Image (tube, rainbow, N blue to C red; front, side, top):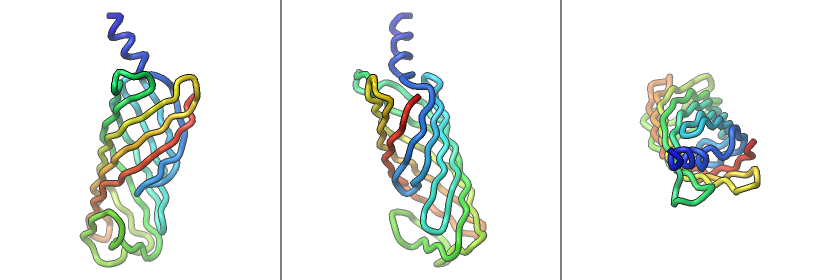
Length: 156
C-alpha cells in the first residue's frame, strides 16, 4: 500500500500547468494533472491556420527518478485554415490538392507519447513528445503528421 501511495506522489508533482509547445503544432498548452491521468489542451498556431486539441493522457514515473514521467494518450482536434495554406512542405503527408483555402477546416484524431521532467522544488517542467495525428479536411483531403514537439510549462 505504501509503495502504491508513494508512486502516486511521484507522478502528481503539480496540479495545473500552463506553457508553450514548439513543433508542428506550436502554441499554448494547458495541463490538468489528476495523479496518474492528465487532461491537456493545446491551442496551436501556424502560418495560415490554427487548431484546438484535447488530449487524455496516462503518466508513470520514468527511470525511478523524481521529476521524470513518461506519458502517453489519445485525443482529437479541430483545425481552421486561412488563405492559401500550402501543405506540400514540412514533415507531413498530405493527400489533397495543392492548396487548402480560407474557410476550410479539419477534424482529426491524435496520439501522444513523451517524457516530461519537472524540476524538483521549482515550478518549471520540460517535455519532449511525439503527437502524431490523422486529419480529414473539409475540402476532401487527408493529412498525417508525426508532429514532434518540445515544451516548457510553469507548474502550479
